[in-house]
Image (cartoon, rainbow, N blue to C red; front, top):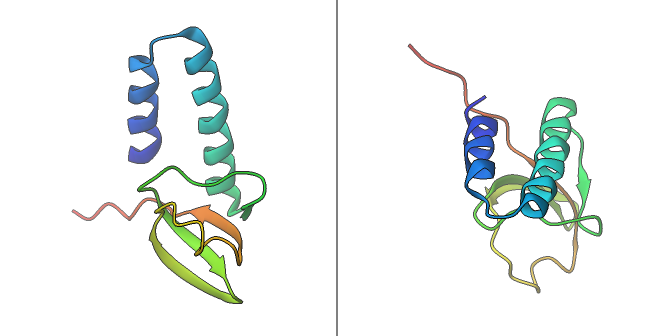
Length: 89
């Protein structure tokens, strides 16, 4: 999956072992959430800035990129990463 490959590549560029361990945990969580279609509570954690997501906000679902606007997130309860698009030949 391209997204996960990109994240793994980014992991290799981190400076400290602690940064790499923390990023690896986030990678595993994101991969699990993506594979299971699991909604992630906003209270648990927020997406990475610019990450493409599905957001549950005011009883509706929205697709977009995460931008940390605190007011917009006051009523958001859950989010999940979007799956990779299909490969078209």
